[in-house]
Length: 309
Picture (cartoon, rainbow, N blue to C red):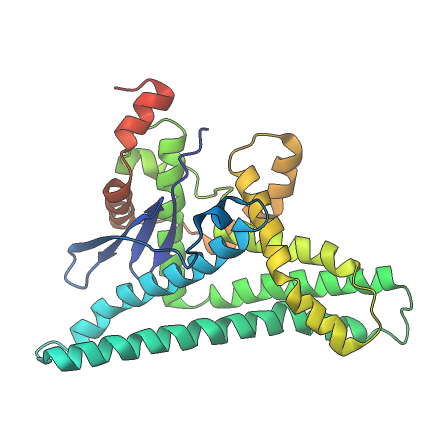
């Protein structure tokens, strides 16, 4: 396998693929046609050197991923809003007002999502582990309990949302995204047939990144020794950029290394992808291929890395 450095995300009835600053969103519209939008994403980081510093770049990459993810998800959802509003003619002023409202909703949604994630996966496990303080005196054992609670909550959360019909289709598009990347990174032409037989698991997946975040947070939280419960919670939240930075370096290394130790560390995240990726239908694979081809010259990539013409 040779890394292509392209990445992506499943959206509503579609796929977003990104290569460098350029990204494409391909969506299967209600009428069956594939709509594609290609743009360049401008990072929140204005000083480019920050994106090159190990353990620092991961923090900004994580934030950029959240922003772009919400933006493309909102774009894909707009096709179903358009279908519901078919026949309604808006003035230019109304269109601008609607776009501002959508941007505001997207910002609020992202902030609320981050707060809920912090509460569910960083704060709640600590308070649950604290319930055992009366019978467990060892700081190490309490950290182990917190770790078990954190991992359990993460798995339960994934299992619960995977029961939703719309999310199941998103997970199928997620599988199509992985299969496309695996197809070209293993030297095969990007066709529906080749993509179909490729793996739906990939080491650079966001699911694996989140699992690394969970694992790294367990190690980092072990070194928090202050006694005050309030301070322990605040320090956990303050250390999130550190945790994200370390996790990013691990996922980046995992995506480009065949080292057996890195491979072993990647296995839990790959196993979790069995919950967040499903086998896609052929029309979903077609959407994924369209998104890839808008931002990545896979034929040139094969020629340079596998000697294909």
